Length: 245
View 1 (cartoon, one colour):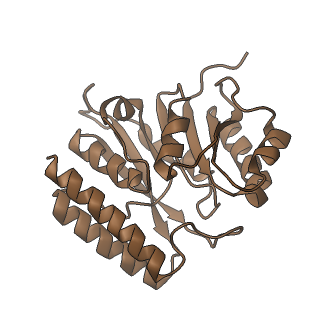
View 2 (cartoon, rainbow, N blue to C red):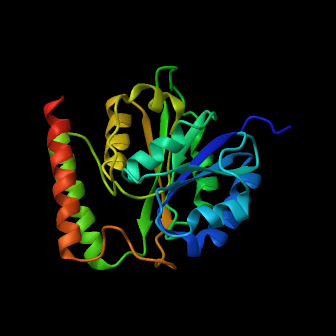
């Protein structure tokens, strides 16, 4: 019988069938080496991801446990954030979080993130910890775009919010229990980081290599029109978040 996992890592997968064998292999190593579990979410994929998941991991569901890799099925894609939150509801570990399925950031980075959960001196019971990657190796244009968005969000929301979409994102379960209603789309990364700072969490960053995508294409970082749509949605969410302060 598996013991309770030290951590639960959720990975939303949308049309990632070609990369799933490599992803599952990396996740198996992470789960075993870190005594945690990885929950892969088939987030309404239109390719043959469901069949590949079943071949690699058996039927959807499974029991939480240390060293376990399992998958859950979301029949209809309602957004990146919705897929992640659907996976988070299946977790039981005291440390939870997510990363991406495209292997641009290696799931193995999570093992380094776990080392940063040691509580610093003076940390009280009401606090928690959020650990997030800081990306290196990205094209200049992407770095400029990220810097601009980070500056805008930091000024608008009056707290430091840099490299918001970097992965992995790992945090104490207390954040999930206190963050309210999260967004269904890519604004989830902004929401989680902002809520952690608002609630007085200790935020720690560590460097991760951002590699070229091996399979498929990005769902938003494809051309100017896609980026413009992403920016509009992010700004709209940021403004609504600002009004709620």
